[in-house]
Image (cartoon, rainbow, N blue to C red; front, side, top):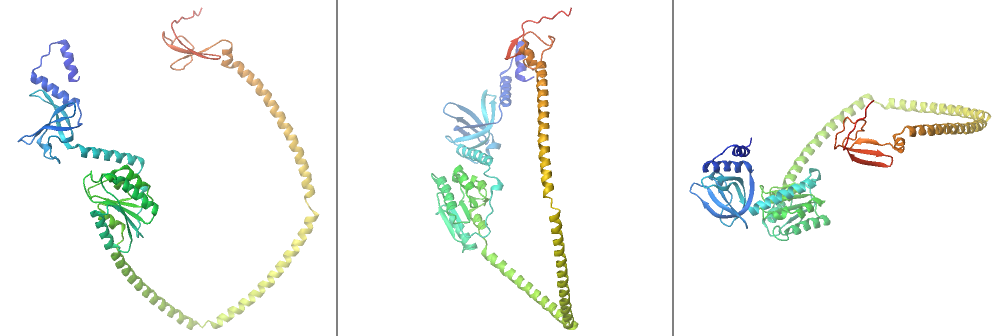
Length: 460
């Protein structure tokens, strides 16, 4: 039995007296057990840091305040500096400070309310876009191995564009670069970024796009967490690589883009081939091909010499002349045989044509057609007779069925009574009780009833 209900029961049966300490202990236990871990948002006031390292403060809003405590073990891992007037988001549990009988909130985690709100907004948008399929792997495009033109969407004055251009100049200076200048933070940045992506998609000047900016706080990177930017990336037909922030920074754009790079410089390396390395590889492959061809030519030359030697040893000229003469003889024999065979087949064809004219089947076909027409007419008469008999039989059976149908019984003033809840037909009063609801079906409808009297019929 829960403790609160046990005390209620004991107080009804006997006088139960608590000391103040017992009362506060019980209330404290009820508070800690009755509330799960909570998130609370408010403004810090009455902040004090004790010499023990514990933090004591009040959290307030426009209408109320609550005392809070954060013990040293948790306070030592704080990433922000608490101060009066700072709006914070805290997680903790409700408790009671027993010596004064005051309830308080024990803080286990504290963060800046602004950053916390942005982080929640980020997670909510991430979950929604993932549900919509914007992060689906099957939608991702492959970056071109050798792009003809590279587009860069970033601030024209930031460090990111300088890093990207330096990397591209070092790795592949011959590939042209188109820069789409945009704001990367602040008011209007999200629309400029989305419009630049759409413009590049319309122009189709580039084979791949780099979306980049340098590192910063979550507020600085927020333009790349906007839904309009995510949809612009998703609908773009060009492959997009996201190089936003540092390696530890993640934005919505990273998840929607076809490839995510840890930094803008890394994005430039991923989209650009290393021409120096390619030249080295081409030279190496050319040397391998040259050596391979030399070996093939040497082997082929040696094989040709061996064949020439065999040819000289066998002196095939006389044998070749004999084969040519034999070929001419066989050709003449073949022509004579073909002429004889053709004459024989022509004679057979003439004989067959004469026999066909004598035994023409046209008259027999006409007789068979006349007989077939006669049997068709006879068959139609038989089918109509069978249909008439079946129709008459069906009419008789339908009349018999109507006579036996419960609907015909209903037409004579009878009704079918069913239990309203189970739908079972009631054939006896045994399962019935006063107050039960039944429904009665008559010829033209049904009505519901409540049983108010049950009377058995004397079997005598």
